[in-house]
Image (cartoon, rainbow, N blue to C red; front, side, top):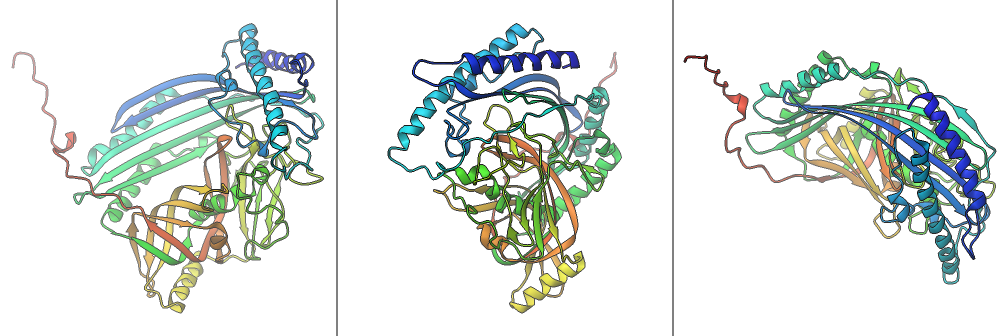
Length: 552
C-alpha cells in the first residue's frame, strides 16, 4: 500500500467506527460503547529451493481485519474470561475477517460493514449469555473493570520496506540447497526465504489512530539425515530478523550447513537417552525456551482472568519464584540486542496502547504481569502487551523477554558446577543441552501443568569432564519445580527470535537469556522407529548419463 491509499483507508475506518457506535442498535439490546478496527495489509514473498532446484517463487497479498465491538460498559461488558475463547473459526465474524485488498473503498468498507454487523450481534448475544451464567456461577472478576479507558493516541509511521531482490534470492536458495546433492545420507535439504511486510492500521472511537509497518525476514534451512542404521536426524537453521542486512552471506550459510551436517552424523551414531532425571545445564537459547514456556505464558494477564486456566501466579505478587540472583522483564520498545534486530519489537500494541516495560520478576520475586486493557487488579493499567495475529481477540503476550543474572558465572565455571553437582550426588553423568528449537506448555486448569522442549543436541557430561552426544530426547517438567531448581546462571546471553503460538495467534517474539544450571530436570525419550533401508540410491549417487549428440 502506498501512503495515499493508507491515509484514505484509515480515514474511512475511523468514520465507520464512529458510525457503527452511533447507529448499531438491535431491539432490546444496547448500543456498543466502544468500537475499534485493527487491519493488517500483508505482502509476502516465499522463495524455496530443494537440492538445488527451485521449488517455489511466490508473491501473495492479503488483508485481515479484527473489529472490537464492545457492548455493555467499561465497567462490565460482554467479554468473558479475558477473551481467550474469542478466536473461533466457526463464528460468523470469522467468515468476514478477510477483507478486499483493492483501493476501491466501497468494496473494502462493505467488507468492514459485514464484519462489524456480525461482531455486534455476537457481542449482544455473549452479553446475555454472560448475565445468564452469573445466575448459576459467581464471576470472580465481577469487581474488576471489564476494559480500561485510555486517552487517545495518534502515531503514524510508514517507512519504505526493504527491497526484495527476487532473482538474487532465487539464486541464493538454489545454490545453498545444492549442497545436499553432494551428501549421500541427506534425504532432505531445503532452503527457504520468507519475507512478510505488514502494514498495520488501528482506529478506535476513543480517537486513537495508529499506523505502522513491520518487515520480517526469515531464512530457514531444513535438513534431514538418514543413516545406514535407519536413524533419522532432523535439523533446522533459522535466521529471523527485521533487517535483511543481518542475513548471512551465501558462503557463511554454506559453512554453517556443513557444520550442522557434521554434528548430525555424530548424533546419528550416538546412543538414545531413554530417560533421565538429574542436573541439567541449558545453554542460553534452550534456557530462554524454558523460561518462555514455564514462566512467560503463566504471567500473561488475560490468563489470570480465565476460569479455564490454572492461574498459577494469580494473587502471587511479591512471592518468591526464582533465585534472588535472577530477574525477568519484557520490554517491546527494545529494537536491538548486541547489534541484532528484535522481531518482538513494537511501539504500540494491538489495542492502541503504547508498549511499556513489564517488570515480571525482580531478584527472584514476582513483581508484575504482561497486561492488556482487561483489568487484572484494582487500579489496573495496561503495559501495552495485547497482541494478535489476524482475526483473534488480542490478549496479553510476550514481546521482547529478557532474563538477567545479577551474579552470573562464565561458561567454564558453569560446566565445573555441573560436574561438581554430579559428583556430590554420585551420579554417573549430568546432561548439557546445547540446542532446542521448539517447545510447548499446558496452562489449562483441567490439564497437567507442564512444559516440553524439543532438544536437537545434548551431551552426557561425565565426572571427568568428558562429553558424549546423545539423541532422541526432550526436556519436560512442571514449571515451579524446574525454575525453583535453578542453582547457577551464566554471564553470556544470547538472542532467540521466533514465533510464539497461543489463543490470539502466532506472533513474533524475542527471548534473551543466559545459560542456566538446574538442579533437577527430567528428560524423556523421543525416539522414533528406525527407517527401513532405501530401496534404491539417491539420483546423484551415480553420474547422470550425458545426452546423446545429434546423429549418434
